[in-house]
Image (tube, rainbow, N blue to C red; front, side, top):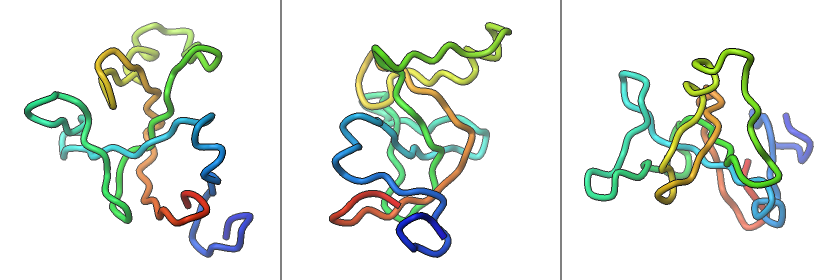
Amino acid sequence: MNNVGIVGACGYLPNFLSKIYKLCLVQMSSDGNVKRDPVTNLALLAENGKAGQLLGKIASGREFTGYTDSKSTEKKIVRDVLEKGDMWFASGDMLKQKNDESGVY
């Protein structure tokens, strides 16, 4: 149960914080890669209630310093997720989200 009483939820992000903490769930292929739109080559977002890997946007003021090994760091960065040139940290966690009027669970 999370802090707003939802059984089975591991977190809750109120809508007003979603402008500060940029998170998304992306579809993954069976080989462990992010699924991409064949036309735009941007990531395909997981649908509400469907599993996807949790990504957090790497942005000014929220840099991802990574690991001591640069190859390990590079493996955790996903580029061109929502727009060309953006960078996101791949958590490795597969989650489902439920959106409602107050936020994301």
